Image (cartoon, rainbow, N blue to C red; front, top):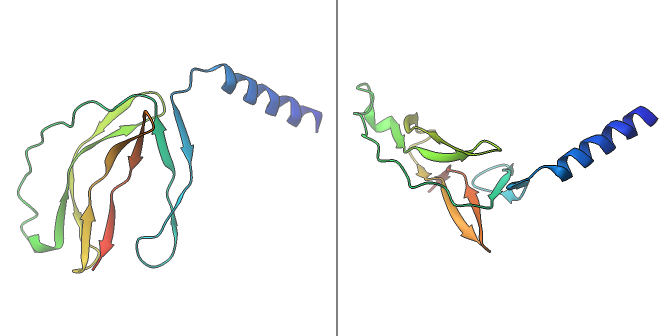
Length: 119
């Protein structure tokens, strides 16, 4: 028990000494069907400008089944890194892709992940 407490104290102290620029919380987001918990990423500085991507042609067999999901900046815990765009198979004909985005809130930047919405 004392070893666990000592380890926990060491982790808490070392985390407190680090220069943290992001926090993660877990708001509840309901898109369709069962509830989905998505961690909220909050960063103290804005992301770089979005990169321009050349969108390739969709897969040749049944192109209507695929949706281009543009690239976006991802926070890796220390810095932003670019996640390139790609085609994703549409889960249903009623599904529409909502792009991920970074939104300024109270002087900080909050990541809103991309997700499917059903109409």
